[in-house]
Length: 430
Image: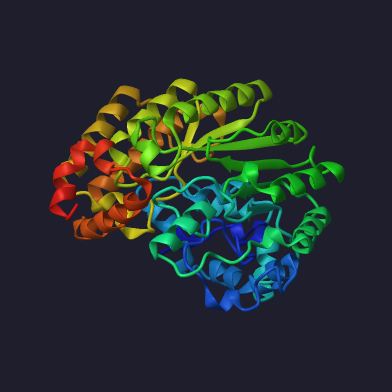
């Protein structure tokens, strides 16, 4: 790979803290790097110490043009013409892949890149862009989720014997660690963006505490706040607090506007989800917020994903599926046999044919001007993926086994939501 195919600005401007307090160098990081994990936890190290010191190895690799294992999801997105996290981060520093060499030379962080090149990957910067995983406090139990991100699912998994113990306390349950992180934000010059994930953000106490601290320290008018909600709860107090911030990026997590969403995002009800979605859209448009639907397409929802694209297109809301689902492997879209894959493909192709208006590739997926075109672009990426990614139908029995165990505690059946899948599921042991 050439440097333009591997380089990312993220390690100079961004960092992530996971649910257990582990620091990572990117919100899109898919594999853990043992060399970065040594003492890289907010329990043991200051955030800035991790960013400036521990992450030097990654910056060196980036500057050397290395193919980095932890970046594979971005490489895969680039392969299928899906806007990757890497492209989004490059855009933040004025770099485009299409004109890489020229824009890299003119980037405002060029001098810092040269400093890192000459100093073993070190930097004088502080992260101005954070992703904050607040923990797993959540009222939902999505079938593709994990106990680390859902306390409800953790309890269910322990009951079913999938896990022996529920995850340990999240870092946000330690007040002194939340204060440590808040102090880091207060010390960061030019802090630009903080994005929060759960669990469900609106019911996680630390979300409110951090927002209030940013407001109290007169930082709210300078920075943008992003968060994702599962569209099952409403918290007016939080909504009122968000109005204090320079900009709000609202992520609305839903898979499709079809009853199968109730099964996949158990125990939500699509009627309630739709009502709350419309409420968010109304207030978001009134206040000029940036809004996206955050989706995680699986083999259970890809057949009805156009219902989501329809809703998003009609309401001029962008759709952001940050990457192609890799884990759990049996939930991947590629597990579908040929007939079902072809059916999903034809529905997507017809939808794109009816709505296509893209004249050029959209990298800034949060620009509301291009919301409709961006929805079409996302749909095209799944067409490319379905047409080119190898089949993994051998994982169907594993999918069936998992769903049957879940259904034993939920008293539901996938066949009530996807009767068109009956033959393939029965053939795999359902």
